[in-house]
Image 1 (tube, rainbow, N blue to C red):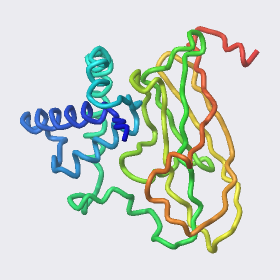
Image 2: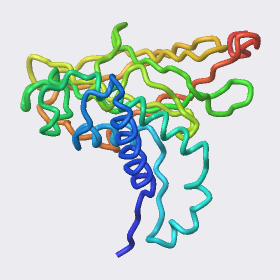
Image 3: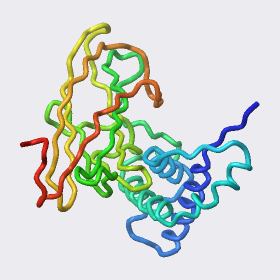
Image 4: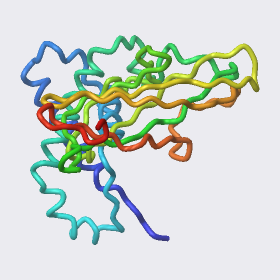
Amino acid sequence: MINIHNIMEEQVITRVNELYDTVKESKAAWLSCDCESCRLDTVCFVLNRIFPHYVVSGRGVTHNVVFLNDSQIGADIDKLTVEGMRLVSSAKRPYHKSSTKVSDAVPEQNTPVYNFPTFMGNVFDGSTFEPLVNASVTLKIEGEIAQMMDITWSNPCKTFKATQGSYSFWAKPVVESKEGESKLFHFTIQVEAEGYTPVTYAFSVPLVSECFDRREVNSTYSLKVQDLFLFREDVDNPMEN
């Protein structure tokens, strides 16, 4: 059997534990807990936002030494880890030691709901077509900031070089009175970055209410949002002319 492995998992797990130990030793006031559950939540936060890098057995790891030692990849992992640590530490999670990650606001099982797909997209510099780093991306539903399914998905979220300017959201289900109802949901993606003209993109998603419980991410139930391009404030956007 072919053994395929995502080498980013070890990189992220190792770095998350190192940073937790370092921050704990420094007695940082913002670190409220460093239990295994908090560390795992932070690992998930980072892995949800960084591209996987698959290899076949140990031979692939050897061939990817240069990639693993890339200083920018390491810096992005560190930034994401600290962001995740702060988010996890600030979240009000009275039962977090039992590894409960799903939001308390998520409806009970077998309740008719509209289950949203995970939304994924990429942000680019409109002049260079390079992934835009450190952009803030916000998902809104019907004009309001969308609540996320669990704490490892932030809204707004940031883009990083290691993730190639990508972002992702997993919105909390909306309760319906009965199963089989149809509804059109209106979303907007707002992107802002220092020195760039903000961009807003609107789209709609038709859904049917169901009692099927979607409390685990399903990569096949996702929606790719069109690529978004931001132009520096001193550059004319040709798409608006």
